[in-house]
Image (tube, rainbow, N blue to C red; front, side):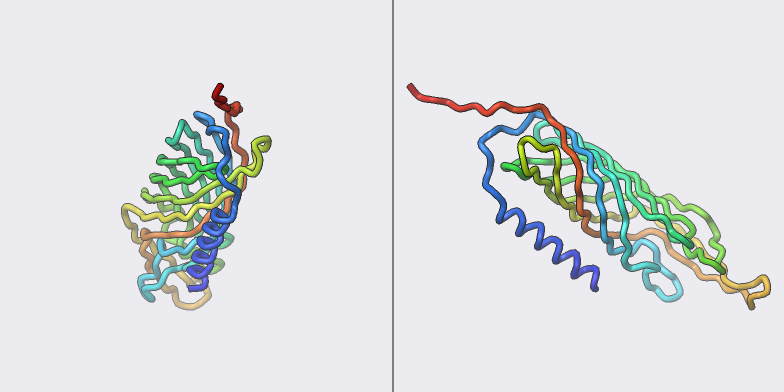
Length: 221
């Protein structure tokens, strides 16, 4: 619940930033451009569930990622890579592509993107005294991203932004983890269901490159 409150607060902050920022600029948007972003994403995660307790194995987590988006007029296409290694199991890696709509209003670029990719789950249920049944599980997923980026100066390539995102795995997998045994008592096995959904907000900072656009001023004689 605490993570959900953070997501709501971040979404409110994103909206407020848009409302209080400067108005639209008079110069036209460049016909195309490319951006390179790094991001940190607190995530609400229900993609791995303990089948004995029927609870998510890790209801909230953070991940870091990288995205690149190419825009041609209002069409946006690109790719994302994100994840977080697990020190004793539960590592994640996601590789996906995005495509969608990115209109520009002044300094703001709004993005509505669809996402398709694959997610790797590493050592589910693993730990110091636990042995997972498989080391890697790959699942395809679909998702969506809604967000914005803002340029603070026509002479600067720096952009800041945020994405609200959601992902849904297209299939499921059953894995397990064995604890104990080998002189540490009786061995027990815990089953897990891999495959579900996750959602979060990605806070972005990066660089955008595009051709310079000259301001056109019409004068009546």
